Length: 74
Ligand SMILES: [Zn+2]
Image (cartoon, rainbow, N blue to C red):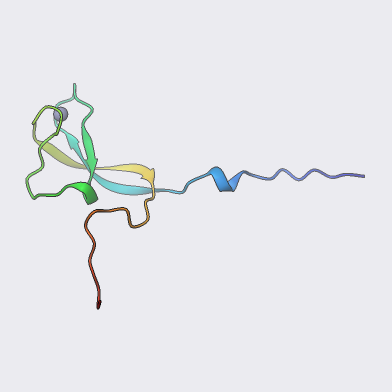
């Protein structure tokens, strides 16, 4: 007798986490960026140059892909 277990395809499921982002204040614009990728203290939409507001989104967790690295004890 064969028993098929209902295996989940966990390998294809990337974990999501609540991530700090900046989103465009213009509701007609879909511009947004991860807080990690915001390079300056002034947050301006790259699409329409509107001001951006801090927000949060569920995003696939990234591991150390931020261009900003904190080098510790090298
Ligand atoms: Zn925008």
